[in-house]
Image 1 (cartoon, rainbow, N blue to C red):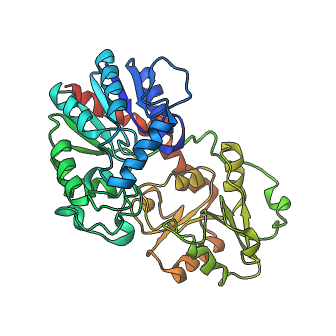
Image 2: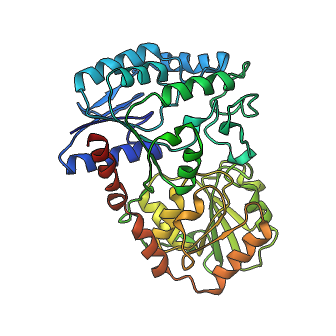
Length: 397
């Protein structure tokens, strides 16, 4: 079996790491694994870079900015991709994010339909069944159900400066994406799967395959971080946000800071604002890509709070649980799906009072590191991704 994955990135960011993990899984089961992406520094004969020119990539991003037809440019790069597909002759094409300013979806899907290639498509967001945006939950938009138009998120990713093409893009995407003869949709959460079933992609089978994490790297880890930060005697609340606003719910840490007692303190990881302007009971620490350092941070805090207002299935929840740390999150998207009653609490979205009450419940006890770690171990990458072989086999059969 030959499987060709197509994604915007490879080996980096969440979707790129998933693609890399799937290569290992495919090889383990005796399949030939190939990957095509926008660009990569990976030296592997089975990893194909569609564009090696940053100027070309920027030019196609500018076309979206100017004319708004995101996903319908990059013709030269897509011709190179089609030649590569011809050379590989895959039994299955496994799509991930086909948006990202690197691909012409009309050319790719026309090729897939012409050659009757089976498709597995992992949706990491909602872009595949909207006329513009990858997420609509934050603003409560329902237009995707019947046909997008007058998009209120036109200036959000993928940014279109002058034109609202949501109505036309929706119609063309619907025609292209529903023309595939054999396709199996995969989503990382039941929440997203339910949305897909209500969209024009609902004609295809949908399987939920939860994201996984490296549970060996993310495990309970000793560290002196509390001492180094001068917070040894504090009950520590961890948040991962870049600012005190936006869709990740940063504003709720500012609101929580007004409720905390003297022995409670917030740590914000990856905060990019002015740390000197934060309240005294909030400490900002810089972003890190080190799994070991992340595991130390998760392990030293008492609770991980994820007040996200828009999410599909956040891996940060899994990382915290795997390190033995309980999680409190809003009832947003698929964020709650990783939690059990003994390892976390879900509260109504936007309710700061209930968010703080949940933190106090964690503080009172009853949420043990062992219970959290046990839940985290249910999301090892190897266990989660084994389900993909069933998807591949169903397409081949």
